[in-house]
Image (cartoon, rainbow, N blue to C red; front, side):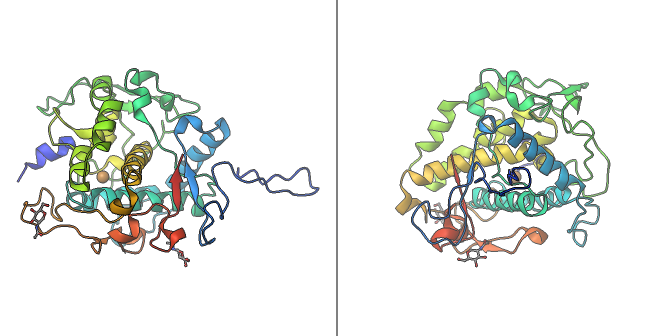
Length: 354
Ligand SMILES: *[C@@H]1O[C@H](CO)[C@@H](O)[C@H](O)[C@H]1NC(C)=O
Ligand SMILES: *[C@@H]1O[C@H](CO)[C@@H](O)[C@H](O)[C@H]1NC(C)=O
Ligand SMILES: [Cu+2]
């Protein structure tokens, strides 16, 4: 059993009213027509795009929707009493389930569903018209600090203020900053849950501790290609998640520890708004891997049910339940295998990547 300490560290719609004459609704950029595949119109497939392919207006509308979620009252108070906002609800559920959703066979399926429900909340509760954007961090691996994601106006703001090292032997290599963010849309954000496993009510700032070394070492194209080259899901998942040490944090850990601070907290990382763009990118890579051999890979699932579970099982199968607690009804892994499953009648999802 790994120590908890060790785990801690891994741890417009432009409804175009042309004046008030002939209101011609323009198709929302990023949404494709219901008939794009010649399939039934059971859902409208939305297209998730890389952050820098969004227009300025789209970027602002995404960030506005995230802030809206941070202002909407929680619905999960029955199980997470100190959750204040809908944004907190998501973070709280991740904190509660940390030990049952990482280093397990359903790690990618669980986070896939979690993201889809977050995207749904942005769209249905906060009037966001686009799809969940993703962050292709390979584009920033060699110049992490210069990433447009950290732009204070058209991005998520930058690094945390320098903070004294906490003396932890698990300090992230190359980490800088460490304190509260000093600019951008989340400069005044308050986190109410965490850090770590704590669900006691707090009021904390958003912390970041950029590590360009982590980005360069783990968030590069060679690492992604290595994951994509894996022959079965078991190996793909292992390569993506990596290990609980800084010699091999995988591309999952790369995204988390390159941002650091809240994002580097195995439990509380969804308190970092960029968490959702990082995980969308992992999900995109997962879908890319599946798409290389869809007939086989729409049903390839394996890996332990229990964290670091024994090789002798029990293992995750297609009928394994994925539970988001108060966020959404439970579904099976099977229902999450196809990102367009609701269109083909095999699941609950309805998005694709561009
Ligand atoms: C679980 O999966 C492992 C690795 O694929 C396999 O060796 C083991 O037999 C499986 N356990 C059960 C109970 O099926
Ligand atoms: C999936 O599609 C069906 C119609 O085919 C619809 O009734 C159902 O609500 C959809 N599920 C989700 C989760 O969107
Ligand atoms: Cu997670």
